[in-house]
Every structure is written in structure tokens, then in C-alpha cells.
Image 1 (cartoon, one colour):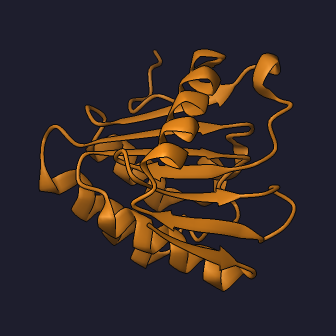
Image 2 (cartoon, one colour):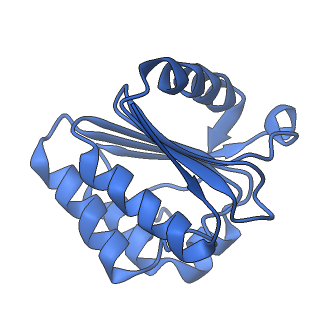
Amino acid sequence: MLRRQINGVAEYEEALDILIELARRHLRIFDYNLEDGGYNTLRRFELLRTFLLASRSNRLEIVLHDTDYLTRFCPRMIMLFKQFSHAVTIMKATPEAKCIYDPFAVADLTCYVHRFHYDGPRALLALNDVEGSHVLINRFAEIRDASAPAITATTLGL
């Protein structure tokens, strides 16, 4: 098991990149709005696209407190969502889950990045930590269950 303390925004973005590169089947991301973490960068787009192309069974689940930043300022993420609508789910936390302030991302069953509060860059990157990953996966399931679909891959209208 490897644990590394993260103390800045650039380190946080790098830790997320490492996590995505290690993912083989499932990525779970809980965040306030994806504004921090480099989610609209070309590098992040390519890493997530590579992950989703690796296998038709790969899944990316995202739960956010607020989706405005995503829909207004992350065209690459929206493009990924539309291209891989079978594999990407984006949910918005309902009021029951609004009191959770520590973003995290979990790759498969063993690795995670856990940010202590969405207002600060301090976080922990943990690799091969099955127990810690299991706790966050269960927490993600609870948050997801207290969430609703946020955006759709298609635009409906008359």
C-alpha cells in the first residue's frame, strides 16, 4: 500500500491523472462541481477517453453537488458523456447529500484520491488500499442513492 499526501492544486490534478491511468474497470467521482482538478484539460479528456475505449464494460460514474460548471465550462467532459453515454453517468446530489464536503475519486476496488474539503487542495492519494477504497465505494453508493440524474446525452425538444 502506498499513500501520498497532496498539498497543492497541481499535485491534486496529477494524483487524479495517476488514478485514472490505473483504472481498469470502474471510476467513481464525487465532487462539488469539477471546477478544481483539471477536468476540462485535454490531458484529462484523453485519459478518460482512453479508459472508456479500453473496454465496452468500463464505467465512469460522477456525482456532483452543482452541475452548472460542468455544463457551461467543460465541453470536453460533455463530449465524453455524449460519445460514451452507455458508460458514463452524471448525477446531481439532492439536499440529503449536500452536507458532504470531501470530494473523492475511486478507481476499481483498490485506489483513490480523497480530498479533505472542496475548498482546499489538501488530499490523499492511496494505491492498493482495499480497505480505504471499500469505505469510499460504500460512501459513493450512499451519495449516488441520494442523487438524481443531472444531464442527458441528448437534447430533447420540439
